[in-house]
Length: 258
Image (tube, rainbow, N blue to C red; front, side, top):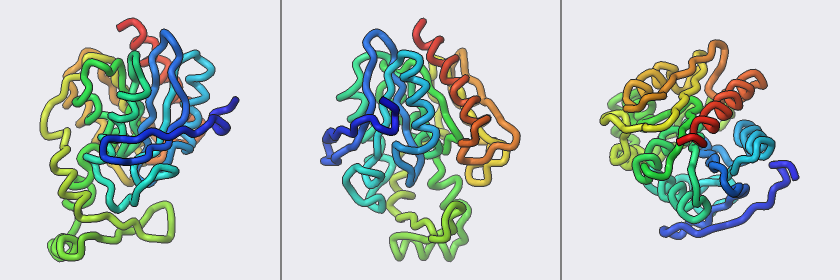
């Protein structure tokens, strides 16, 4: 069975989200858990490629949709970092019993760090892909004019250009305020396991310097920022997928020896 055809299941989180997920554990092996980007779902190019790699290499793999995304319940406009982190924790707490390797893409890179803080004893490795920690202030709020900030607070949302579609992206004000409760770059974080932070140097949404900043912020013996010339934010071209899979292989091998 290919990842595209793997059956979709549902679980419930403590706050009532009906979370769609697919994949599963492999006995005696770590489980890779894929955390997608904002507005993405579990069927993206990177998620499917990583799932196929895991199947081919005899390790577990789980991908899922956050509240308000894909096949899960809820309205994305009501979602925020706290709620999506709770979804991630529900997935790993209910579905994974052994070592966990987190793969976080964009927003998922922020959630990856929050999950690692919440369950430090369960994580055996992390792979970030254009990770966007603290983006709600650093990449949205701080780039708005004073008038835009006032309007967003007054109206409860703001519409900004979408680099991938003609329709604007609408960000709710509560996403900004909740994000401030979940910042990770303002404090150092322990990472006693292999960490690889992949970032395209042509990323126009999240500056590649974010990977360097995050690498410096993590206290660990095996933390690397991997900068790729010519790669954009999506990091989904075949040669970029090859880089991702190679790093997954390295982190998985090291995680198995922890």
